[in-house]
Structure formats: C-alpha cells, structure tokens
Image (cartoon, rainbow, N blue to C red; front, side):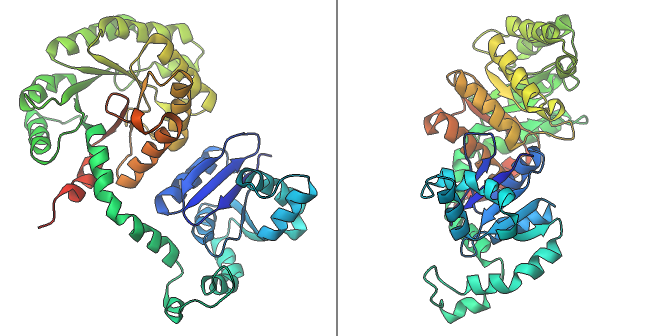
Length: 408
C-alpha cells in the first residue's frame, strides 16, 4: 500500500508519497492544510506519518483525523535514528520526509498512533502532551505565562493573522487574472449589463465569460476597457460533433467573442475514442484563428483518473490550444489542486507555451493563492500573467473586492 510522510515546519508542510520522487509543499495554515488533505484524498487516502514538531503539527493532525485519514505521529529522534539505521542521511528534509512512511510501517511498535478515523479518541490521547508542547519552547523553557491562556488553535490563528497584511497585495495580483463568469440558465441582458458595470466601477478582470447570446451585450457594456469577451462552445455536454463545434465557434467569433472556451468530448475520451475527441478540438482550432484564444475545458472531475487527465492535456497541447481549463463548473467535481498539478506539469513539460485556467468552485483568495503557488513552483513568477494563467470565477471576484478598497 502507498504511504505518505509529512515533514512539519513552522510555516510549511512537505508531503512525500511513496513512489513519487518530488515533494509537494503546502502552507502550514488553514488553506494549505485543506489543500494537503484534498491531495491525500485524491491519492486514495494512504496511511500518513508525521513527526512531532513542537505543536506545529497539531492543525494538520486534527485535519487528518476530521477527514478519517489514518495518521500516526512519531518522535523526531526515532525518525532520525531509523534513517541512520537504513544508511540514509537524516539531515535532509527530503530523506527525513520520505523515510518517515517506511518507519511507520517497519516499526509499528515505536510509533504513537495518533488516530484511526476517530477524532475524539485522537484528541483525548494527545491532550496532555499537546498542552505541554504549547507551553514550552524548543529548548524546553517555559514561555511567557500569557501563553497558557491561548486556545488550542492559537498557532493556526496566529499564522492567519500574520498573512492578513498581504491580502490586499494578493487581491491586486489575482484581479487581472480573473475571467469574471456568468453562465446561468436564467441570465438576462440586464444581468450581464449589471455585472459589466460593476467590473468597470470596482476593478477590471482579464475577461468576462458569458453565453453566446450575451456576447453583444457584454461587448457594448465593456467597450473601451480592454476586457476580453469569452464565451462557451459545445457547452456543457461536450458532444462529439465536429461540424456543430465549428459552426458554434464561427458564430461566436462573428458576434464579437475574443476567446472560446470549448468543452472536450470527455465521454469519447473515456470510451477510448481519442480520434473523435481530436476531431472536435481540431474543428474549433481551425475556426478559431489568432488573435482569438481557444481554451479547452477538460472536465477533469469527470475524467477523474490522473492518466486520463494527463492524456486529455497532451491531446489539447498537441492540437495547439491556447489554454487548458479544468472544468465547466456544471459537474459535481470541478477544479482541484490535484488536477491542476497534472495540467501544470504537462504544460511545463512542453515549455510553458500553453496557458492554464482553473474554474469551478474557486471562491476565496485562499483558493486562488493555492493555484498561483502551484503555477509558480512549476513555471515561475514571470509566467503568471493573463496571457498564461486565468481563474474562472464570480464568487472570487466578490471576495477580493473588499481588500482592494482603500481605507478611509
């Protein structure tokens, strides 16, 4: 069975998974822990081992227990001794993190079992030790007496408070990457006009994404702003008719669209009909010539398996699409960090020429921060521009606006 180890630091969590050569790093705060747990669930909920780290492991330990992940906490000295016994260098983070899962399975008698899908049992088991850890420094000296009155989650709250000053900067970074989206079945011209007026007043996104019948309304409402008009084709079903896709694409461009978000025939791909899927993408690419952009919606939540997501990404890049997009936002599972990681890895392997768009369920700045970090780790800060990275959202736009308002 695949196992995972978590190396715990004050500000970061490094995840090592058996059989995977690269570490994945997450922030040791609420949003990062949530992404880490989501990654573990995506990997099939492997057994997890983490080392005690002066109380800094408590939030991730609680999160694993809350989601019924099998998790064990070990003494760091035991982990280092195990690494030495196996001939590894225990002073490197990669080895310590990677060896930790082996330590849990090889020496079960020396591992403190933190929890096995029982949060209450875990908290009872560790309550006494956690109180001691919170009231001591790394050298074992008592901290200031005021710390004894802090709640159990004070570490997590302190880290979140420390990030607050950067929210304004993050909001300003994310705004020009947003595809402000309204794809409601009951959308009216008045609704689209109101959305565009709000964007003109409060902050311009990279694009607005609307149904084809609202292209003209959006273009008129945003005339002179430089905001691009995106629309959807073959949406949301992802049919397999190339002629239909070509007609829809040409009509959308004639109506004034700058960008086409095309749904891949993902059902055909799952059925093994790769040629049929390629034909649909090729039809759209033929109709959608530069300077118009073609984004390919892979519907990663329906493809589900990493190998299928990777195959769809490779198909899109081979067809010359300008962006790989995660989801329509119309299915149960939409954008996830795990799927984004696969797409960004494929994009990076092809030199970063193709862009990436995350869409579906991205509602907060913490969500956006995670996707920016995934892109930054693989393609660099300079790559993160509207020409390469987009986030399709409406709730996210609402979430970032308060951080851009200048205090009175």
